[in-house]
Amino acid sequence: GRVIGVITENAVAGRSQIVIMSGMVVNPAWSFTPGTPVYLNGNTLSNTAPTIGFVQRIGVATSANTLIVQLGPSIRKT
Image 1 (cartoon, helix red, strand yellow):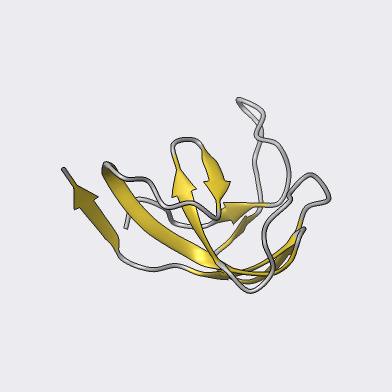
Image 2 (cartoon, rainbow, N blue to C red):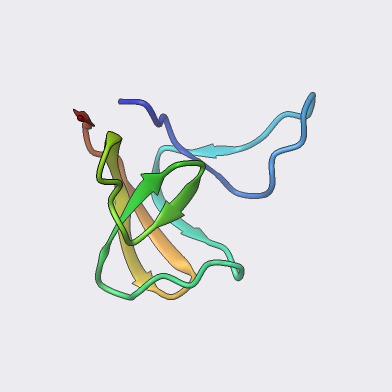
């Protein structure tokens, strides 16, 4: 897949990050629709799957700001 995990805070160049490859991640800045899949859409996570390019399901939102990371395969759409 294109995504190997989700980091727990904003990335800063030159600084190490914790990467979650499975399990729960909470971020108060998110506003997902609970019970729906979450995808990488451009450079952000979204309940909306991209219509072109790479599509990869990242996990499932259990609340507006909670994601259960379950990485799916990356599929190229043209």
